[in-house]
Every structure is written in structure tokens, then in C-alpha cells.
Image (tube, rainbow, N blue to C red):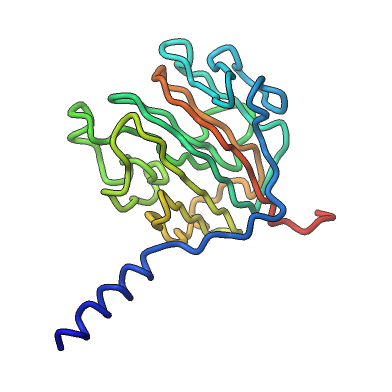
Length: 207
């Protein structure tokens, strides 16, 4: 029995880790020096030394969108939070309106901050805002870089944080949102840094 328990623990841990997609076919969405390829309220962001920064105060209600639309994809990026920071990633979003309502928003949030102590489970970091709650406990301490991946495959959305699936194939079909749209960062006036932003388009080539 004493040999079986460690093996079972190892198996459970392995199942909790997400398989990484192959490196091929990923396309950078940020060139590290400017906001070429992005549209929207770009003045709320700064590009410098390979980092895209949502500026404090200036990024409030500043949404920036990929110029291109996507339906099925794997979106990867790294991010670094400041204390109490709040941002978000909109997917399949139109260029107008609020992506948390007319599309889907994945939370980017320092949910360790005291001011967020009473938020709902579907508002914590990595959750599909007010749609699906993410597993907690996998954010690195504020000020450290995190790696996140969002997979959108038809009606299923998966969110992977630092190698762990925190939202596992949430079925969003019942919300009747667009099946295709832009990816966007949703500034809320907090300083949040992003880097290594890239995408793998899973749609057929001629679609």
C-alpha cells in the first residue's frame, strides 16, 4: 500500500496538468515594439522591450482588439500583475460593446487582493466571467510572470494557467454568442504587463 499511494498521487497530478500543443503553426500577435496588428483604444497601452503594458489609469475602459477575427484557436500569453490589478481577455468579440456581455471574457485578476474577497466564483482569475468558475490556487505571487492559454474549440472553452487546467472544456453553447470575432485585452485602469502573445488558428485554411 505504501508504494501504491505515491503512484496514485503522481497519476492525479499528471491528469491535472494540461498537455502542451506543438510549437508549430503559432503566429506572434505582438511584435514587442508597437501595436501593429491591434485596433481600438491603443493609447491606453504601451509597447516597449517586448512587453505590452496596460497603463495605470489610462487603460480604464481601453479595449484593444486583434485586427483579425478568430473562431477556433489556441491563444497563449504571459502576464504579470500588480497588487489589486484587473484586466481581461475577450474572445470572439465584436469591435463594439462589452465582450463580457456580447461575447466571452476570461478574467485577468489579482484575486488575492482584499478588495476582491467577496466576489463570486465566476469572477476569480481565469474564470469565464459570470459563465464558468475557474479553479483557484494556481496564480503565481503578484509581480511574477504567469503563463496562460485559452483554447476555444467550437462551443468548448478551456483555460490553462501555469500548466494546469483551471477551466476544462466549459460548454458555452447555451449563451448563443458569436462563433467568431476578435481577441481583445480589456483595460480596467490597472497596470498589467503582457508578453509572448501568440495564437494557433485551428480553423480550416480556407474558412
